[in-house]
Amino acid sequence: MALAIMIDGVAYGMVLFVIAVGMSITMGLIRVVNLAHCGFAMMGGFACAAFIGAGVRFELAVVLAVLATAAISVPLERVLLRRVYGRSELDQALLTLGLVYVLIAGCNLLHGERVTELPLPAYMTGPWTLLGLVFQRYRLVLIVAGAALAGLIWLILERSDYGLKVRAAVDNTSTAQTLGINTSFLYTSAFAFGSGLAAFGGILGSALMPMEPSYALNYLVIVLAVVTVGGLGKIGGTFAAAVLLGVVDTAAKYLLPDAAATAFYLVMFAVLIVRPQGLFGRSLT
Image (cartoon, rainbow, N blue to C red; front, side, top):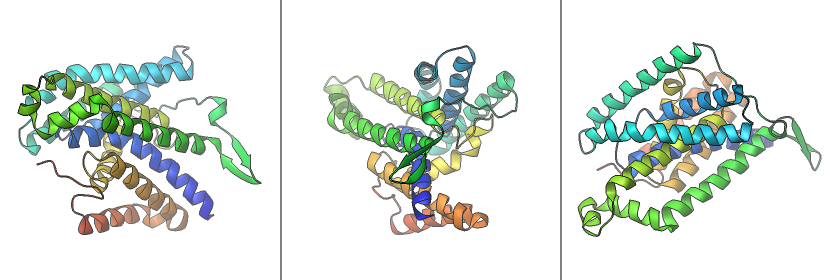
């Protein structure tokens, strides 16, 4: 039982991480409250389903859906979100929440109100036996993919020239511009990167978090909780918070199903009481 809870909890946590880390980037690095973030996860899932329905292989469909979502996010950032950079959090929240309802209406128009399932390839489904223990392949794929992606994101943001420029632009935009850094490109690319991650998370976790038009609102609070507990803009913090909350939520569903949601938020409250800025926190201001 304990091993099953741990594996299922970590797998769920990895899905939360892949989706939430994009929001952490946009809120912590670009410093914009993006409540539409889960809408990009929903967009990626529905786009992947559409590509698969058109006969595209699953792996290629995932790549195309992620790229399409990232591409769509670029004009949205330049035309809409850029207008509220530097303005109050309320202005940013109202704009992005309005975008959520536009995305929901669009999904309802294109797909209806039904739940859309993504057919997973055979190597991601079924049981897998190791040392006499039986595991679900899907959970193990989630864990491996999430851990690998966490390492890749950390390398990009912490060890690459691009990541250095992004952090410099965030810390002091005027100085970065004086040094010749194209901050406009950095903000747009970081937003597209975060949106693409959300799309990949939506696809990856579609069996745990089903694709439906209300997806963007259903999981918004959960993803916000992960970002807040981890600390804005902190990749390690987001990873730790996602795993912690994923395991807590899964354990509660196994042991105390009626109190699962309560346990999730109690842990969140406990962390924020001790660490108001999150596990590895920094504030928006």
